[in-house]
Image 1 (cartoon, rainbow, N blue to C red):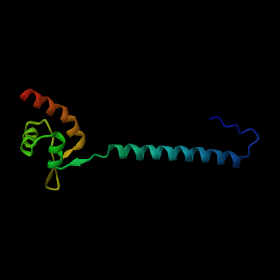
Image 2: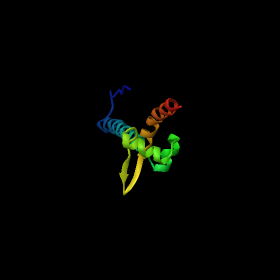
Image 3: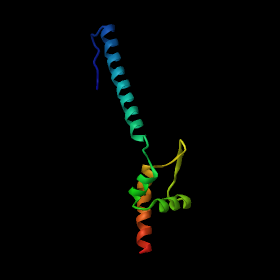
Image 4: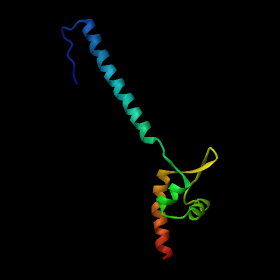
Length: 100
């Protein structure tokens, strides 16, 4: 956007600059807030993770021990990142088909 200031007063020029700067800062803040909201991680309980993967709790435990699925201890409870469970879903599906 081009701004023509020929014949504008200093006050008008300052007002134009303040408006442009304010809009730019507002847009940056909205982008930062949106990015932060998108990065927020959802954690699943053991039961939720097992259901999502279609396996038993004991199989989920075995997958965690072998490193296929990463578990996290939060407040004394075991949780799983939903994004990682979704990523592991393909690996688990492949294991099921290999076993017959």
